[in-house]
Image 1 (cartoon, rainbow, N blue to C red):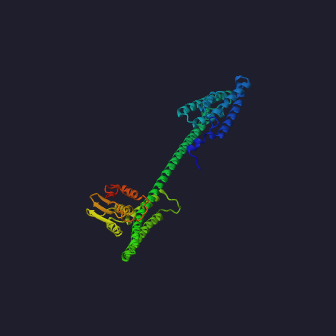
Image 2: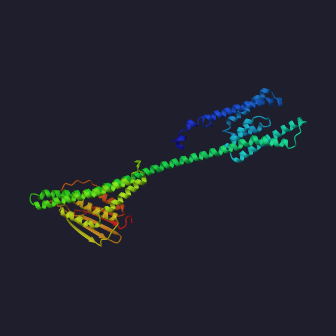
Length: 438
């Protein structure tokens, strides 16, 4: 697994424990180069002592100290180059000069300073080589090369010692900076991908939660109303069976019809969910965010297309009347087609409100009002106080009916109000825009 920038920073003590070196390999390399440079300068110090008349131990000691400066080439590359330039007249420190120029070019020192120091090293090497060659040519009078020989060889020598380490150092420095830039970019991309993955997981979880809520709401609307009516009819059937067998038969037939309708709606809903799962489930078993969103949207759209319509409200009211409830239906304005979401939501609001009347206000009278306006459709279901003489059907309540209605209406940009009336009843009112979200 690739370590991120934060991981590398956290691992700092394991990689930055050797002064200015980052790794043990760097320590070993610099110690080896400094030892080789000190040995070279010590040997050249013997010759230097003989030429200048100094004691040999002094020349050797001077060479050892000067050559050891290469140990700090990573920390102070400018100092190393300056020391190598200062030792050029003594013809000492060739290894230090080459390695110093390479380190200077590969470091983050400004290019202007690098150019100046390289020029100084080039000039120093050229002058020393030129002088030595002149002396050698003067001593060997029998060998008479042309005037071009000494400056040309001096130029080649100075360029040969300065150009290769300079160019190689510039290349390594540029490559190192490029790698650091790519590493930082990779760390940044990794952090962004991790953030995007977290957000995608949050959105997927939100989409799954929304889909579960929608399924629960649909199941509640389908099952609660039908089963409530079935329970009411079953109670009526039990009451009238000994007295009026014909009415008992009719109630039994109604219970069977409502049960079949409930099963039909459940099958349609499950069919929509299965088709959505089939379309969105990849063979790997991992569901991406886009598939979750598409499945939820497809299931919601299919459920809206196959759901009930406003023109079925009259039959819905008739079912409640058959269950023994007194319901008055009034419609204002001309019925016109709406989007499937609006029609299904309006139907479900009326359905759930009537279900609540069956549950909580046995024997109460109810009023259902629909109003078709220019850019909206309004609905209101109101019931009076419960009739104390009517036996309660004993229907359980989960407390999710009003919550589901409110979620449906607000999800389409509508207004939902519910609460008790002054007469002791309960009222549910909703207004939906003709176009969802308008």
